[in-house]
Image 1: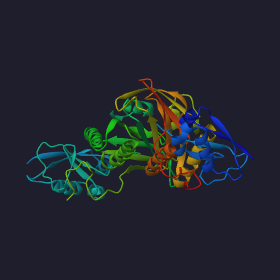
Image 2 (image 1 turned 180 degrees about the vertical axis):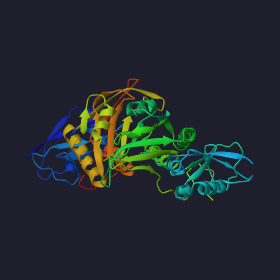
Image 3 (image 1 turned 60 degrees about the horizontal axis):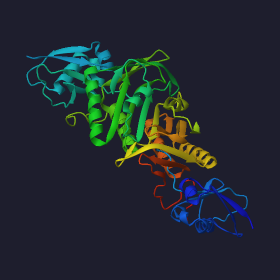
Image 4 (image 1 turned 90 degrees about the horizontal axis):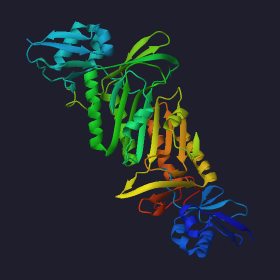
Length: 83
Length: 83
Length: 150
Length: 150
């Protein structure tokens, strides 16, 4: 099974206590499955994870997107640059 | 009869060949009368004078405005500041 | 800061003039004349104004903008005399708690300045021609006037 | 010029980067965090980003803006790391032949940057509290995404 390494940032990183989490995902796992796994592993991220978007290979990805092996994956909590 | 001293600027000044013209106006003369007099005195200003606004005491004035003695009067050809 | 000046405009000074601890947004506009217009080259520009009225008109614009938007700082500087193409002839800076007000006020100020403030530009063309710029006028009096032209 | 930098932003350099003989208008936006919010004081801010994606997102914004408006120059600089309130955390400058395009593009760039570029701000409050800022999110994915969130 592919192992995904997922980057976490800002409040999501602090809630999880790590800037990277790994998940040995079943084939066909989606962004939505990954979010569920993040929340299961780090329950204190639940509220913010629900409001976060995934990025796959540095682009925002929809929740139905299937994770492919070797892709660069991150969770992007609501952004606050620009002021 | 009151003597009005009228300031001219930019293309209007160059067309008239002077930055100031004086007019001994009949009582009750208006901005419109002043424009007619300007055009009569300096026919080469006619086209631009028709497109110019009058200013009385440093504010734009309508054509029906009656000129009062001692007011500061100017003709303002279309402006082109700001770039 | 409201200024009609023969000196080059320093954008840093215009920005500094609107700096405020209560501002979250600053918008600066710089207006310049391009060297080339439809294949014709401008070598220099000359700006003149009706000084007493232009100063008053700029102050009026400042007051009207402050009535319409919650601004912290507002600054308008316009060049007079000889200006080279590419140099800023006008700078407008506004600061506000929020950016919508700053963008709207900045846009309104330059639009209204161009319509109503008695400043004129003379183009000195490379082919030797000299030309005062007097754009087609709107049918009604500029905003600061007492009413529609009869 | 697209830049994510730990150094203070120099507005003059951002303006210089969009200077063009074909530009008649330059619009510069500076965004700052105010020291006081509802009676509460911020002592400092910390900005972080997802560097690889933020750089790409800013380049995408630049490309999209150039498709939508006829721009001559476009520059975006965002601070990272420690920033004091009142210092600019972001600067956006655009230049264009005409001012409408410059104002519209400047406004669109800061609006879209704030919605979509992966940069985050941490408020270090004077009362000792520390807080990542994660605004309420819109229901749909940011503009650069492939489609609406399921």
